[in-house]
Length: 474
Image (tube, rainbow, N blue to C red; front, side, top):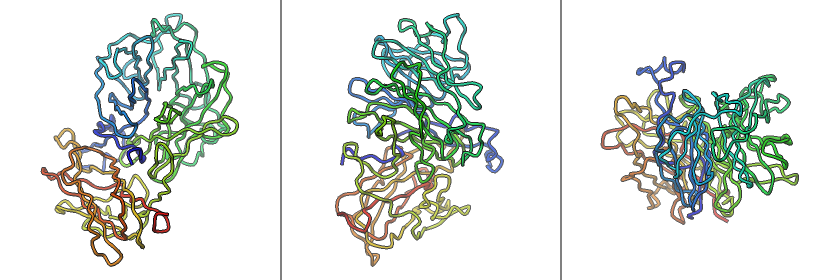
């Protein structure tokens, strides 16, 4: 049971969205506070060091794990701003960290993955020209000790993703001229912009990362737009050099446009607990803002031609053995709920869609949602994605742990006796994944959200219960 995970990843203490004050977001005109408040975590890169995994998502935060399942939040100690899409590498006894520019492109260094990081300087080309727009950067250290830096965005084929070999002793200095490695290719349908890839000559190719596996360089990139459900990852391959030439992909490496895990782009590969490569990626929420995202992780597999692919999972998995044979048993089922406000009905919590949510009434002190599974199932676990409609950092309404209970009823609506009790929960998980005790069989499942001591209001974007198809575990 200890090796079971479920996407999106259960990460504590998510940070405030960078664009919470985005005046260009049209949703702001409908809000009384005239600003969007949300939390985000996306664009993950990671590193395995001394028996621990270090996860670096946007923005200026990190997570650490010893088992790849349970993560602890750690702020990054750094003497400057760190923008979106951070990347990290361990080179010559120090860690190099950089990200998309806030005001300028900066490379930081530290003796520890979590810092303190101190500014080394700006990245420069061999002729001394500063690389001012190090957008979506990626570090790569080859087996021979040669160091490379990649960056760039291409929307129409005029720009591109660039790579430059850097001096390992002075990582700010390029020792060879930048090379345009890849760029937008409209012939690849997944690179075309649009929810249905309808823009034939325009895309959004970015988020590059490089991983070496069995002597092959895997240069993977993101395409079509982070705010879209079919945001994808694809992979170029080379057996020659980190700078190519590269064999183009024949299909997306990971693409998942439906369900609770969509928009599966922008992330890096990392050695997983099984010693094999795993893919970290962003997951779309898109409830209040394009950048409202979460993170997923799945193992990388390879076809007969050596091309990598990833099956994005949204049901519980075992790290060691993969599928547990589980399926969602609550999606689209009949729902009873205690209250709602602003027409955010209880059915929105089980519609398999991230932008919608159930919002209980303000005076409902123990709001509940109860799902009729239509038959008795052997049940395994549940995933909750909480919504925070009253989040207001300026007013001091900050994120806090959600207190809740899950109760079970048989076909005659008699209580089964077992209750999942998180009434004293002290951990802030915006995505909550709970594994049930063995032997729970029920037809009705009730989630009760308990108001906090300061009456903080929570809603539910997703309440998915997982069980065994056919009603019973085989």
